[in-house]
Length: 256
Ligand SMILES: Nc1ncnc2c1ncn2[C@@H]1O[C@H](COP(=O)(O)OP(=O)(O)OP(=O)(O)O)[C@@H](O)[C@H]1O
Ligand SMILES: [Mg+2]
Image 1 (spheres, helix red, strand yellow):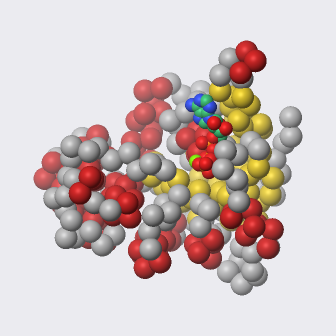
Image 2 (tube, helix red, strand yellow):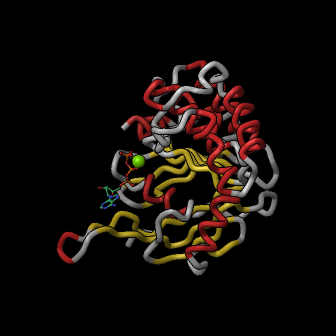
């Protein structure tokens, strides 16, 4: 099985996530599909790491494993030094509630709750009071430009507005790792910029990191590291210094 390349370890950056030989398949017998084929990846604190690659190559599967919502079949997975492969399910659930903000490709907002209530959920899960949770939810909704939609339910919002509610919900408990599946797909240029600036301010924290799955080459300028995947493997990892342009073949990959 192909192994994906690893960048040389670098002592300047702590690792938010370290993956070695991660595999995952779905289905049984003849219908078994090997979706991840030995993923190696370092996600550094202080970085925005973007994950690109063609539809179906395994991006959502991979970030679900990093977030602890899906189990790997094999390999090593450390997130902020915790070995998620050996932790009990209940411990992973607690770890996730404390440390990870996840923005799903399909938003996954709760249809019966309004914006404030949706965004409050991660804080309520942590045992914070409703009053505190709603105050925080209002602040973050304001930051993503939804100050005038606080009481709307998801069905009363546009796709881009729903996406921003999902982003607010992922940020509200100030998690150390934000993981986003196509966070700007439904956003116009202005809101895309607002959201990326929020992610940049998160990633600036020495102990924090952001992972973004994207096809949106408008946001590549915000990446510190781009990992490109194909057919279940990370085939290339590219560090950006903010000056050197991204190689054309990576731009092309992101479009496919
Ligand atoms: N629960 C599942 N059961 C069976 N197959 C699955 C399951 N989840 C994902 N797959 C398969 O795994 C492969 C990778 O899916 P994944 O969602 O990770 O792709 P992706 O890179 O995120 O694609 P996209 O860019 O379209 O979102 C696909 O072929 C998909 O059909
Ligand atoms: Mg996906």
